[in-house]
Length: 196
View (cartoon, rainbow, N blue to C red):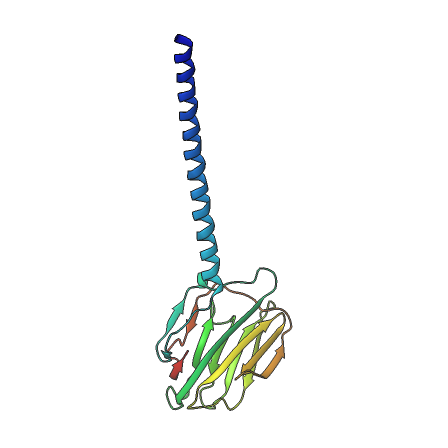
């Protein structure tokens, strides 16, 4: 009788240890799944654009943290696109009308996009790795209507598209220099109109 009791005790102990092993394995699997879901969600959020639902007043500044902006690991390539509606040109007359600026200081931009003070020209400024600022000017930017603007920097080229058509392109002397500055949307009073 004593040996059967010992065998039963050993079997119960083995079953208890197996149950504990399954609990530990289950816990590890759950933690790994939660980690993978979190990692996938973080990538999804970082790869998606920043939206202004229903447009935004272009006279009010919005600050987007540099941490939310995906960064190319090898080549500097990025695109900013938006719909712009300028309803009054006399607002901030004789002053630049900034649409967006990403800069650590006011000497290096990656990029800056603004409307000129007096003429209705759209200007994009991108600083290259050599420290030189490259400007692309699109003349006669439309007023009092929604206009799609895309600023594309790919390798050493700056391209501006207006309503889906290439309006201007400019080769730089070197690739764009990235910076860790926050993206300021419509800073310093922006312009009179809407941005979406």
